[in-house]
Length: 391
Image (cartoon, rainbow, N blue to C red):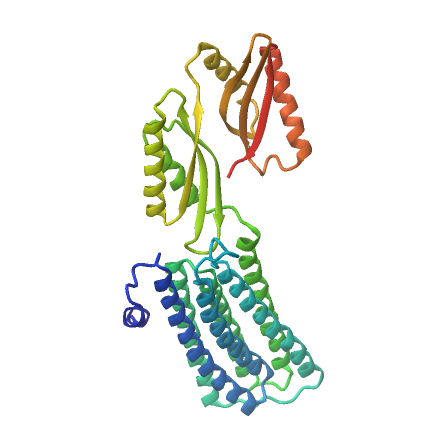
């Protein structure tokens, strides 16, 4: 297969996709192939569009030219994203890759909007389209090139987890369908004098605009801060819980600083009566081993939990029973009893589902209901409850 041949020929250590230099080599390969292919397609379609006087073909041609420019931006973006961390950017420059994808998306939209205008003018002032067999066959061949380019970028984008290359692949597949529409329009022009070309040009241009808008939405999400990958969350929690003497976990936070640049922190509950040096060694080992296996930077915070007294066990069981009444509450943690005699506080955190509890007012109402239920069962306690949003 051509894609595999190109990867093996031009990407050293191609299986080590966690290495930033390997990722850059993949991006350079995809960018160079994109520049060559799209430039060739631009020249073919430009020639066909000028010879046949077809605005829809010209729109498709300049869309390919913008794709070639996007490939150049992709190469530059990956180069900048791989710059080492510095004083101003202590976690590196990986998010530049997302900004690169955003620039590509805006370029796609601009090309589409320009040809909406051009196609409308074609409808208002129609000129005949000249159909010829050789240009028609060239357009069909160009569709095959674009289809292969989409698959090539998608395979590399998935392999190195690149939003930029995934966006490029989506754009290329959209170009396949718009090119098919252009070819149909060109064929129909042989049998009618109606300004089909202008109408098809608008359809193609609007499809290009929509493709650009969709890509903007996809690339904006990680910049604003999207929920972490559920698989990554599951892997982190399962791995942390697999270590001795860790009895519970909570407050997992994942920060995405670009592909391959993920930092995570989590609180691990441990028995308060365990030797501090023993658990410190366990936590250190967990941080190192999980970070290496998942290619992230993991920080684990120790939360000593006292579970030895009868009072704490009974109070915990009471709270657990009460919280089962609330569908919003996913779990609770950091449970402890603070104080003595008639001044005792039940201190704990609850994890709630963001989709079921989204407003501060709802938070207040939920806490009030839980505190009231606890007071009915154990009036000697006051409650100090913190709400965490579950991932």
